[in-house]
Image (cartoon, rainbow, N blue to C red; front, side):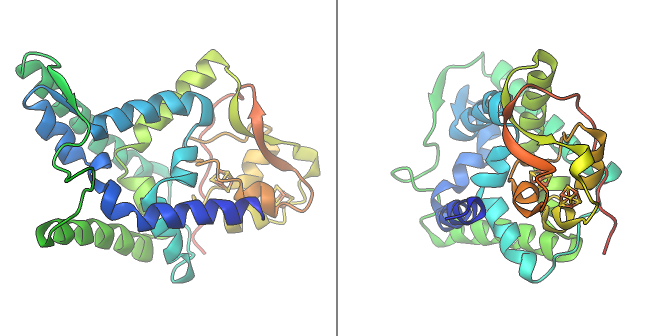
Length: 254
Ligand code: SF4
Ligand code: SF4
């Protein structure tokens, strides 16, 4: 079984479980719980994502996240690359107010009074009634339309409020030069066939990353697709010490 088969299988299972897990990523419930001094399951998840990113970067996006599986299921309809550049900054303007609201509400409530990981779930299951399913399909529909209109994993690029937690965790790792999951490159082995970029779900210009000798990008989700597609093993996925962080260019719109 190949690495990508395993990854796709995990993403499919995660997507099928999305009605169960939806509330555990909910930004609304994070703020709602903070208003009464409670830490929701979603805030706990954000903390785990930040800490986990120190060791595995954004692999959570590439291997586990149901939204990722949903967007990759849209590739058969639109494989066009999502434009990066300044658009990638939009998610920071979603994340900033969310984090500020959580902190402000906790302060107003007098601090952290407790933890409520199952908030508004029924027995741990998020979506159980028609209203819940209306909300669920609104979320799924929004992410799907973005992938179909703007290209591969457009939601991850532009609006994911969880990505900044992981990007910051990765930056901390790079600053401390800790061993972690990462891409390694042998620039001289690259023949610029661009197979890696063609399969990159984040539409990154992988050959440019490889030639730089620093295959690191805040948008890389460490899925390993580029490594599996490269005929010359010019790029590989494994554990190692930090390379210098660079912002990778996004592949041009096909
Ligand atoms: S650069 Fe490689 S590991 Fe990173 S997102 Fe693209 S295909 Fe996945
Ligand atoms: S697939 Fe390998 S050889 Fe081809 S462009 Fe990418 S890194 Fe270079």
